[in-house]
Amino acid sequence: MKPTYVLALDQGTTSSRAILFDRQGVPVAIEAEPLRQIYPQPGWVEHDPNEIWRSQLTVARRVLQNAGVTPSSIAAIGTTNQRETTIVWDRQTGMPIANAIVWQCRRTAPLCEELKRSGVDQQISEKTGLPMDAYFSATKLRWILDHVPNARARAEAGDLLFGTVDSWLIYQLSGGRLHITDPSNASRTLLFNIHERRWDDELLAHFDIPRHMLPEVRSSSAYYGEACADLLGAGIPLAGCAGDQQAALFGQACFEAGMVKNTYGTGCFVLMTTGSKAIASSSGLLTTVAWELDGQLEYALEGSVFVAGAALQWLRDRCKFFVDMSETEAMARSVPDTGGVFFVPAFVGLGAPYWDMQARGVIVGLTQVTEPAHIVRAALEAMAYQSRDVLECLQADAAMPIKSLRVDGGASANNFLCQFQADILGLPVERASVQETTALGAALLAGLAVGFWGDKHDVASLWRADRIFTPAMSANERDKLYAAWKQAVVRAGGWSAVVM
Image (cartoon, rainbow, N blue to C red; front, side, top):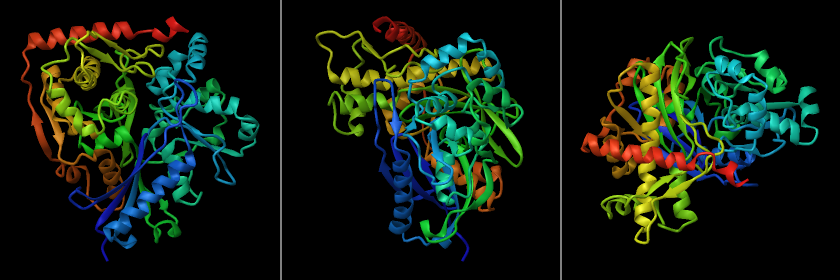
């Protein structure tokens, strides 16, 4: 029987998801499982690697069972993942030696500062397209080797493996036969030369990382092997892999240079496709691999906002301002504006274009008449302001006019946010009809590898807009609000250095 679906495994920061896509790129079944967040200290964030794997396997089995789909109906499995999150496990047993250090974790900020003082950060940036920051994997891996008992000795003896979440999942799915990654994930480690497509010995030396810990780098769209038959009932091909934001860029069909997408999730991630050219940023953005397809590397510029939807989670879980995220749109619309309140959610520092590891969250402009609705509205507006920060830098670095912004992610379902984003940018905002664009990108990459779809032109024709939001705000009001936002950011800057 001819396969009729592709299965995407989307392992994110707060949940593991499994989604079945048909030949039209439409999700026909979705299952999700929340992922526990572990906070050992302020600024530290961890996950249990075994919980990551168990939750991902659980939803993969459940989506097949609940949809009544047999394994023979699945053409391939594509994986996409939270990037930079770092896992080390035993080569023989497959057991992790410590919790995963999550991309948000700031514990290695002092090591980053130490490496900057040694003068290697410029060379690292030239080779990787990334700044020296605790966001990326290399210092997390170094921390594990230096702080977990016997880890370094075991690593140097060849007994330990390193991987980001994609590598960990594919290793588990293949029963330990595959220890691989793709260039989009490798390019987020500070260890991968994005111009020469290889792990770089000089970079490994700077971070004191044994080379044999690293996974093999394979194409983002290729047949890698098969999932163990006892996991899902058959040996389904493993054929696609990309970091979550690059997968979303692919799922949004941003194939032409200058096309831009923004994903509103735990963080906020704005990417512009730059084609076969890796454009160095002078504005604090990241130069990253978008994907490798048909033997060709394609690149992107990226601005990463560390805290976006996570600010709403904080207002829900810690402040008890609302019960469900769906309430935030009505709350934002219940007040005419924020009443002068600005919320800079720098809980773990500020990402692009500021790269201020010492920044911390601030809410400014509070008065005796401030209500929870004002603060909720300010949190939603903060997503749009931070996105404008990044888009202005994208346009300057790439010297390409941005015609529109394609959006996805959970918070993009909020019509207030999308309209405010269009207003504060002065650009149309196009919301994809398929909100699961991250998973869709992984599915498309896997499907292309096994002939489920023909080529990029075929998958580009699948993209549809759910709604287009056009700017309705005057240029004068837009500029006034954005100037106030920039002042609020100044007040958040360097705060942890002040109080420590």
